[in-house]
Length: 376
Ligand code: ADP
Image (cartoon, rainbow, N blue to C red; front, side):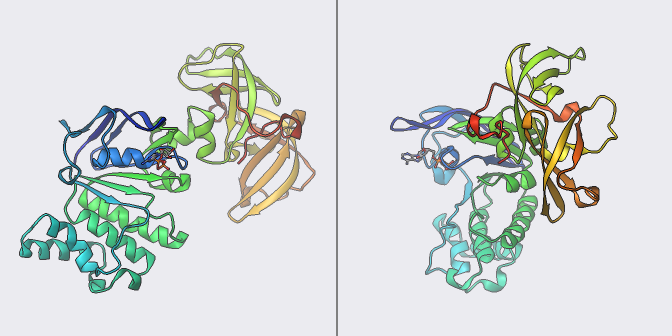
């Protein structure tokens, strides 16, 4: 299991910095996700790591070996692309054996490795089929088998399940996790799907405009985003503009912020904004509590419940707070009995869930009466 370290990687195409100073560590045996919108630079980053492109600047280490000068076929990287790249004329067994044939491995060795891999991926009974005779999850397993049959040191998957149905994705994730676990291979997955990244990643790096904006455990990014981009990318959130009034005395980042909902006590990240600084508050809908019983030290404000949307396992409450600010609240079905559209509510939230982010944000028109609430 290798540790991969990327240091200050840069790659330009013409005037565009597709990768613009990326430093990132892929932990040995871990599953690191790089999440970002289309055009963020994910594929370019993967191609640099795999050796399919040369960086303009920066360094790539596999453990303590610098690999920039190592050609792609000697880097020991297995890849699965979005289109899977299966050859229409080759059967499953031929496809999976192909990388070993290229490496001129002996017939006996090839047989053994291919059989072992087909069994691990539950495609041994499909060995003679061609891609058009396979279901989408079976095609994915075949591409994955071809990528791991050489026992790569690093496995890179570029949006591999994007075109699959939700059920097929679920099943394929289970296959991938099992193979990853059994092979213990360091893995990098590129995706634009936040739900997939939050659910599957051991370590999550958010990428935008060629840079890593934030990296850490998925829960940390979800709960403590460093900016509005990360906060919104990872799930619905209420955004409010505010101004820092004062800092708490606990020295742990507690901040008092003046907002259209009144004074809120929140938690800022590193680099505490100074008093008077414009900030954006992010409050996830599921961290708001409804009802008159409020724990000590929590923020509270009144609101009017305008609409209840049934979402199966939960209900979304569309409310308006002071100053007509729209607020989205998610509550479990069992916690929403007796709520009626039009009624008054008391909403409350713990200071740790009032995330104070640097700077202002711009969403929607100032005149649309939405006040900029950033619920996607
Ligand atoms: P992602 O995988 O996140 O969608 P890409 O790495 O494909 O992002 O692209 C990042 C940026 O680099 C985009 O603006 C894209 O147009 C540009 N780009 C990528 N590959 C090339 C290339 N071979 N030639 C020119 N521009 C490219």
